[in-house]
Image (tube, rainbow, N blue to C red; front, side, top):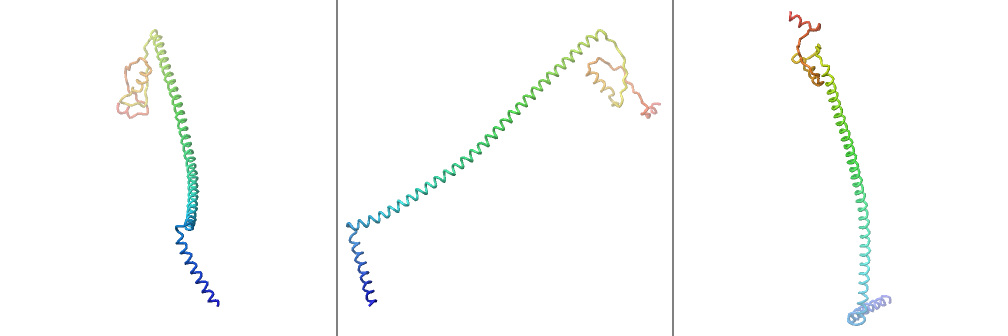
Length: 191
């Protein structure tokens, strides 16, 4: 009997399912069909709302992530700008220092030039004063110099430059060659 009961239940269930499907098919234009259709639409809407909420959450997360990245980039650029500003300030300070040093050097050079001009004026004044004094007491002297280790072609060149620089009035009267004891070969050749 069990098999027979099972077959009856199965046949009943299959028939019920067929009738129910036919009933549903016929209700598609009526109240029940609209109710069932709207319940499915509600399910779609809720899934769409859920999808929209998930999208919004994802967008918010992306926006937050982008803000964090932008903030980090801003911080990095600020740091780089600060470093550049610091370097520019250092360059400016170094330029100022070099300008100050150049000014000091110019001032010192000017002082040197002034001092050299003063010294030149003093020398000129001394020479003028000494020449005035000398004009009164001028006399001529004959001084004999022995120049050792000089160029034989121009023996008096060094002496004449020294005397010219000292502004002494002089003339060379005579140039003689003197042989010293170290240079005996010259004596033998002359004898």
